[in-house]
Length: 239
Image (tube, rainbow, N blue to C red; front, side, top):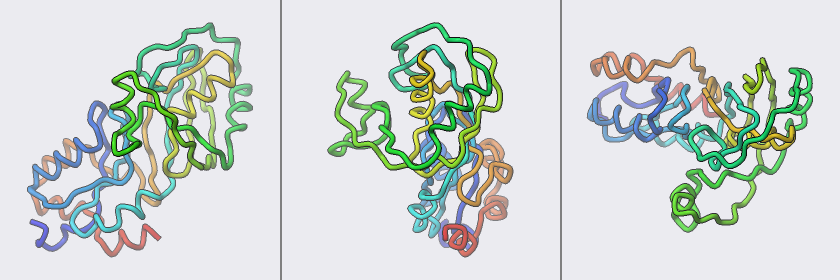
């Protein structure tokens, strides 16, 4: 299949909730009988939004594309912390939420702007000695993690109705938005976790140009080719 013209490049998918990024790759690869399919930047199963798939020769650019900046929107729930920093984890603490205004939350959010060292959550795909941390976490094992240098370009609370805050943020690759939600909860004093997340932008690619997985799987092979961003254009986008 990979030898057919037009099957080298990238495909923009609006990832549904409940699937891993690998699940999406596997569905597309098997459905169209492709040899090489990868993705650029993991989204948690509960997250939705832009997932950039690379196909054929496009896989050669996966590292460059993965390093591009991202934009997300989502929801933070204050008053509850979880072991995974999101709604899928077990509840760790539950505290009353103090009176908070939108302005006050944005003042706290502004303290996260710029370069910083971020501690990845224990429930993550980061590997230690070849083993993903989430597998160790499932066994009740917690290990020391190395903080990562990240940059938050913007972090804006768009709306707040206790205990839920809707936000939008732009950041560098490798930023854990779950950790950002956890950390702002700690600063407010009542704890928080990420209750919803959607990726809007990855580098020069926008969710507006993505198709749902169901729409993609309804295409025939020639229809798929029409939706693929060609390798030459992809290479220019990764610069």
